[in-house]
Length: 112
Length: 113
Image 1: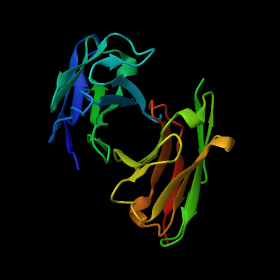
Image 2 (image 1 turned 180 degrees about the vertical axis):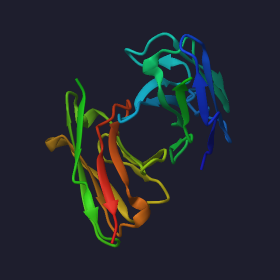
Image 3 (image 1 turned 30 degrees about the vertical axis):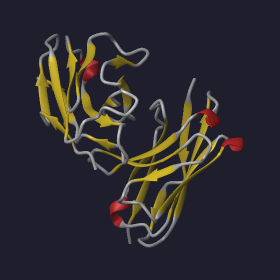
């Protein structure tokens, strides 16, 4: 199975400041069709997860442009340009290239 | 608007069975693959199973293979997860999602004696 490793585990941030979360896989996530199926999700406290980013860098409809995804192969990053209070929660990366699908362990973002 | 509503959760003894349902609305179920994902209390997300839009293919996590069965009835706009030989470690909130990763609110399954 593909292992997804996120860092840091916890990320205290100051409102208005940038934040960055890393996600690494132990195998390339490039699929045979040339696409890289790497997603980012946010789970706010008490809520179901919500997808923010798909195929590395594409924002879901309605996701603010302060969220951006980048990376390739086995190394990926989610960036928040200016953290807002509503961004608090646990962020998960997930690979959709190989079966079984696997999630990272999560990064908890909280306000300092 | 996509709407997914899970049901069927509850408290069950180890070794027993439970069937979860996921009622879909706001989109054409038969056009989409569907997943089950679970989350143990206080833990992260674990993918459980997927079924192709027409039911032709299914994949399972190793942790549930041979015990859980995913199925669908497109005529009833409903996804199912039959869970047999339940274990304490199957305790979790179970979410259904479609292949565009819209999520339901989840249903809690507690396996305990």
